Image (cartoon, rainbow, N blue to C red; front, side, top):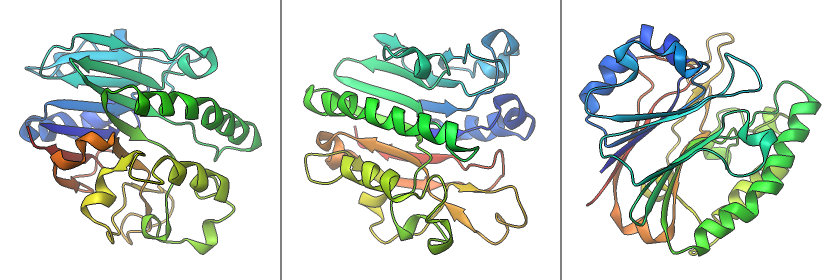
Length: 257
């Protein structure tokens, strides 16, 4: 089973840069997208319904051209969920889940706090509200793969400029403590990339400022976390910084059947 997660920073923009041509060659079973930045009625072109996939979108209703998540699934899911029960989060189009028997795959977009104190405060609210939900999923007995842009790095291995970013959103100590706490022990969430590459220093996002991408001054903030029962099924993973479709790179994980 191949699962891809990708923050498109505008799915129409990524399409114009060749994303769907690249995606066709990946033969993915499930594709999780974040920041579609579109309303579904704007995606009438057949390219936004890739051949062989069932396609599901959850748009932001707070404002158009903002946030939004999607899942493309080769197999028709048993159920699709698009809300977790808290309107300030749900209405920004930040969660969609597909269910197949005992497996759930989630496309998730955690808010960024980089625009200022107001949004950073909302990010902290989301973190506090979301933790019991994550704990409940772990305890549910279901298998979960959580794909998405979490807007938080975990350690020095996940960001080029560690020291200078200690006061910046995404690298704040409380954010890192929260995210690492989710993966704190063998009963916690498994970071697929870190499980396969314990000392890896690959990144999934680069600022558009300066020559950050050319100089690989990046952050790893896009993840596939899984419940512990799926750990043995991890086979390989790869981050694709090129071709460039977005300020993020697609992250691909292969799971054994």
